[in-house]
Image (tube, rainbow, N blue to C red; front, side, top):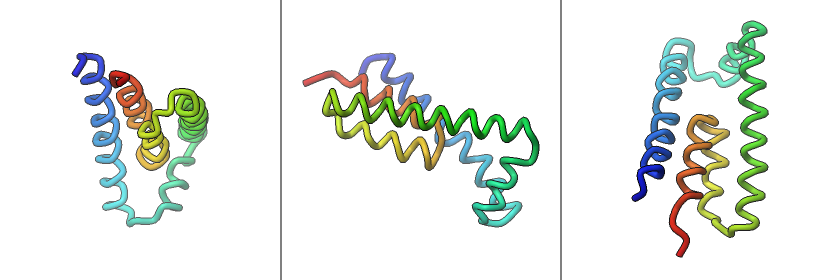
Length: 105
């Protein structure tokens, strides 16, 4: 595997594990209530700005993935879309780059 692919894979794993650590800690302290977490994301303007920044980035990444998959026919790369919205851009983007950079056969 090419070194850049290993970097993308490591970043995707890190992007899945590190944020999830904080999400799980929050859920353990506050209960497993998604709406309470959404409320916490909007506790102040700075947090709301970050949420919108990441939401817009996730939508842009999704549009990019769909347009690339339509051309390249790399259907496996679509898995990066649920990774982006269920885990975060920090996982979805490097995962997509990992899947996109595989050797063409």
